[in-house]
Structure formats: C-alpha cells, structure tokens
Image 1 (cartoon, helix red, strand yellow):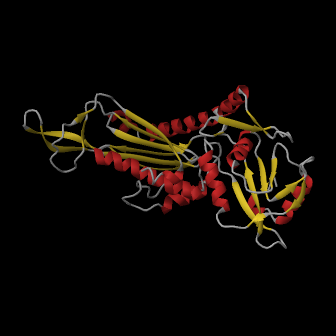
Image 2: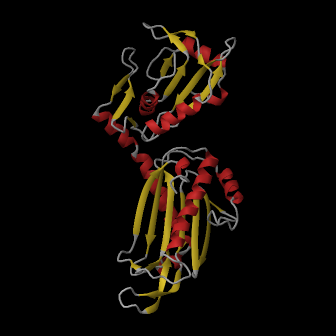
Image 3: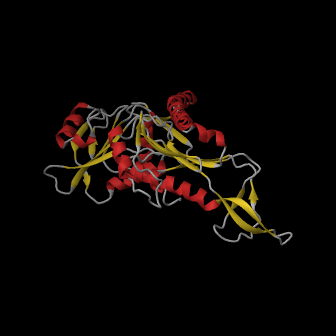
Length: 362
C-alpha cells in the first residue's frame, strides 16, 4: 500500500497490510475518528510520509491489528478530514483519502489516509507554533521536533525555491529573446506571476497542457488572450510584439503562470482641486491594471482545478516603468481627483493563497 496508488487499493490489500505491519514511523491505526488529525498528518508529512487507517482495534502491547471493526458510516467524513488538514496545518497538507465498506458489516467502513513526505516541510499546527515528527516509538509515536531537524527541513526547501526562481528567470529570458525591441522601449507594464510555493514535480503533462491552452475561451473578458498557444520546452506561451501594444503569457507544466501586459495611456481632462483650472494629461488606467490581475487569477483558478492541485500558491504582482506616470481611476470621463503621480520606478506585492480561495479573496 505504500507504493500502490490509493485508487487501485482494494479491501483485500487492507487486510493483508494489517497482518503485515504494526504501528511505526510510517503506520498508524485508530479505532475511531480523532480530533487531532492535523497532528498525525503533519507529523507524517514532516518525516517520511505514511498511512493512517481508521477503524482498527490494536493490541496495546504490540500495536498490531487484532480486529477490523470499522467506524459508523456517515456522510462527509472525507470532507471533514480534508478540511481539517487544509485549515489546521500550515503550510497546508493535502492527504489522499479513501473510504472502504467492510464486507459483511453493514454501515461500517474503514478510512485510509495516505500522506506523502512533503517538500514544503516543516508543517506546523496550533496556529503555526508546534511542529511534530514521527519517531516510530510505540509509547510515543510523535515528538516536538528540535532545532536541528527544523533546520534540515528548511534547507530541504532550498532546491524547490531555486527551481521556482530558475523557472521565473527562464520566462523573463524567453520574453527578452522573443521580443527584444519591446524590452528597449521602457513602456509601463504589469507582470502577474502565480506558482506553487515550492514546485517539485510537473502538475500536468505537456500534451495535456497544450490541450488546456487550446480550450481557453478566445477573446473572453474573463481570461487573458491565449488563442493558438505555441509550444515551448516546458510549457506553452502566447505573445504579441506589436510596439503599439504588447503582451506575453506563459504556462509552465510545473505550475508557473506568468503574464505581462503593456499599460495603456489615455488622455483625459482633469481639474486641479487647488486652482480649479482644467487641463489634459496622459494617465495610466487603474481599471486595466486591476483587470489584468483578475484575468490572470481566473486563469490560474481554472488551470489548478484542471491539474487537481490544492497546495499553497505564491502570487506576485509587479508594475514596472511607472516613474512620473499619472494614474487615472475613472475611465473615459472627467477625473476630479488629484492625480496620483508615481515617484517610484516600480510597485510590487506578494500574497500566499490557496487555489480554492482565489474567487473568495479576489
């Protein structure tokens, strides 16, 4: 069961597993549902991964299974466990869960929870203040981890962090190579970059990613333009290098989504609140910036749902080449507000979010 996909496991596999394995560093048996499931799941994720089986009676001395009695069948058990892991653990852990009926025992079930070793470790519980690991001890299967173990877990993240930075740099290099003249113009633009916090494996095959790109609605007001995507080494891209208006989109099979859109300037009348005089100025449009961010977020929501990815996401927004530019909040009208003039070359923001929260926190 350790190496077999949960979708392929049958009840006979559970019986064989219980006969073979006692509780240890990668196995835990429970007779009933437990309230502190985040502690169990996070400890497995922080160590070597493992399997939790609920509905088992064990010998108190050997910790081997002596009976599979099951628990009462009721609706929402899977959702309850998943929500507990998502809400009670930081960074969130997404376990695999499957419910099995027990042959000959009506309304009794066994719950199998499979937890993988996590590259996002350490995972904490209790408002991110306590970090547990598995010891395999019969008397004390968990322990609060020590500083050297936490340090090891944090250093293990470095590889994934470097991969993410390399993916982002590859995207920027590709933009500069495909659109060299655009980079020299120094036009204002907005970048939106969305990716798993610690990418470590492809979320989708390259063929399925291309199919996803071709299915995106063309000229939709809700998503960035992505018609006729072009294949690149590790994903798909779409770009327009017209100097009057440029954009670039890329989706990487590791889960990185990157969009860059030139910001339009629009002439509008403006009345100074001090002098009362009217004049015309060129403004950047606030609504365009907001819509470019929203469209990329909606694309991300669609993409991660397609991949089945439920982990933590990092969202970065970077607005560049805006020094001495004015920002207009009211499109196609008379703006009576004092115009905002940027004294900085760029503006940057970053958030951590779950895919299911994108619409709620839009």
